[in-house]
Length: 332
Image (tube, rainbow, N blue to C red; front, side, top):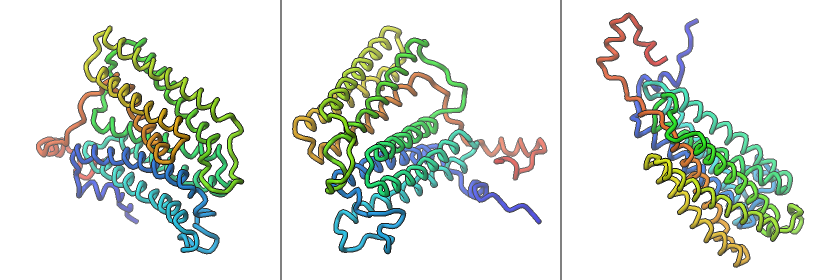
């Protein structure tokens, strides 16, 4: 019995996306990862976390929300449906990365990593509903979304560069300082989820929703302290890059991070001194995504891997055939 053709190979034989097409698809994954974070926040801030009281269906008897569930059911169900949109975007990106020649396994692996993170987070989202919005599970749900954003940004960056061995643009102590900045920002985000878990926006109007048993003002102060640490590290890194005469790109990305941090700080203070209004909290969640993207771009700007490989020319293909290589094997 002949071997069944690989569907991915069949697509690659008939469609050759450009490098820009793959880059835009990877960027679309980044955008959708941010959208999922923001819409997930909207579910909590509109008290729609239990708009669909069970999972994977919306109710025990219905896959979709019923009219009696009102707007909360619609909001929660819409957020669930966005997961399918996200999977579709990731799927198209995987196919585009696989179809492009020369084949780059690093891109397809990052695409599949996104897919499996989404699948895992969908299960965590279901557990969130089934546990009545347990704040620790809610925090894990958000952090997995941040992990998805991390892989999406990495794939976007890799789609714009080559596969050469990384060439460091700065000396090791500077890279270590950047690593400390990334770690401090990660802790800042984790503490932010604790602030959310201890705060007033539980995700449902019911008084029975469990909260993290910490003083909200104290944990918020710790969050603010880490904001100052991250800002200090950012400023230190910028001056260090100037001192070692680093290339312009790393210095520019650090300056962009500083600008995002300043904007996020203003939003945070408005949120704190106005008793956390829903719209401002949602904006702050969007800002946290921008901060994390900016931090990752700083880290990735400290090395280069050459230019993205070009599509082989027809003459190169004829030369390969002349050397005795079967045409069908050229993309395997």
